[in-house]
Picture 1 (cartoon, rainbow, N blue to C red):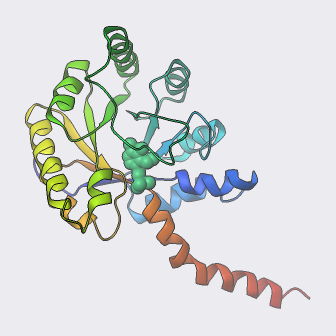
Picture 2: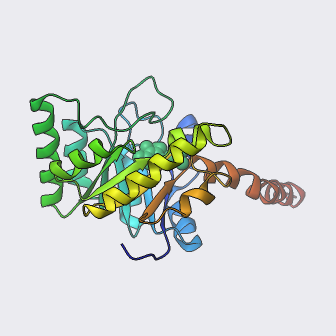
Length: 247
Ligand code: PXP
């Protein structure tokens, strides 16, 4: 892959989480899409989870209508495949999902699964691709997982950067960073598009951007967390102006 700017997918789940926490109409997700795109986001990423803890189906349809490019993260289930085939995002990223986890804790298991599960995964990838949806598998930075993703027909692998992020600044960081570097190079060499994401923030992203072969990063939590502080002053000022001018 020739080196150009790494694309940025902005994950809006945590804006949807604020909306869901009170079932309000705000924060408006179309506004979030427009602000993200105007700020330079190349695509909008959302994760419709089984427990609907943040993005709802209606949010996904609203975002699909107004976003230029949509990446839907989802579990590999009948229900979600049916939903994706109706939503028709530009990309689907298949992720493992457990109800009890706070966020996606590991990569998709593509190697140690039985023949029936492998067939199910392969068929789902084919069905999504038949609708011109590009399919990505969210996997650990592991050579076997990359090879298996290719065999299953994925267009893209998204390398899970969570362990690197969790070990950043510790003795274990280097080992995790090397795994990502080797995995990105190998996946690129065998013809897969290579994305990465999870747990990336202003401190740990610098080294990730130095990895050749990366096409795109998907980032949510740290951007939305920082947006709170970048915007808090203006948000308070806005309400004070309304209070002061209310008579
Ligand atoms: N990529 C994938 C596949 C994910 O599941 C997530 C979390 O939803 C992210 C990227 C973004 O992670 P974070 O919110 O930690 O930036």
